[in-house]
Length: 245
Image (tube, rainbow, N blue to C red; front, top):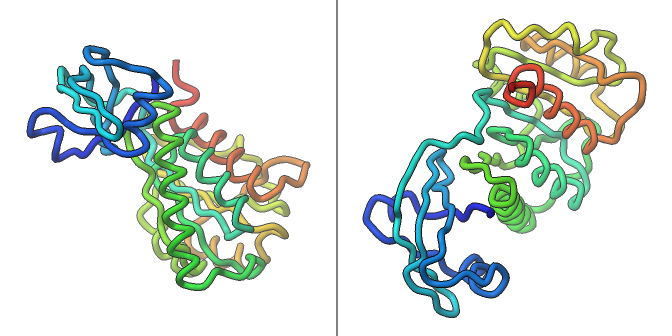
């Protein structure tokens, strides 16, 4: 059964309430009743087991029966930085990256990015990305919400990347195979994915000056959204928990 997100403050004060669309989903789609068990998370890495006390049209009250630290979060602190793409493509990227266990997602503007939306539209797009990430988290039974950044400039991405142990830029003109990436016990990684058309040579040189290594994803040219998902999956396999028993 999927997890439902609850307020971490509520979870410390006794019975918790789920309202709105999630409450309607519990009642109408899952057809749960009083006394049925429910899995929950606070979105910060802690999971809860509970039992439904009451249900009505838009509200479900649950008694907390137990809590534990999540077993579905990767030990790798993985940040994926994606160059801005057309609207719906970005929606798909955040949905799938959430399932792949990334810690944070930073969209950015590069030399070949599509033009950015105006302020009002950007605010609505951010809200949509956060909603998509929440729904994806519930489906894949994660316990930590993805930290989603507003789109920033490429230079700021490089500045924010300074503390990470592994700094990986994927570039179609790179010759270094990803098999050369070594774990070295580092538990943090930041990945750069370019736009349609890829990074410019100048951008790659700036990334290398900031400590990034440029790697190849193989001989085929991938769409930007495919590259983001492929890169996250491979890095989770090599450095995170997808290659674990």
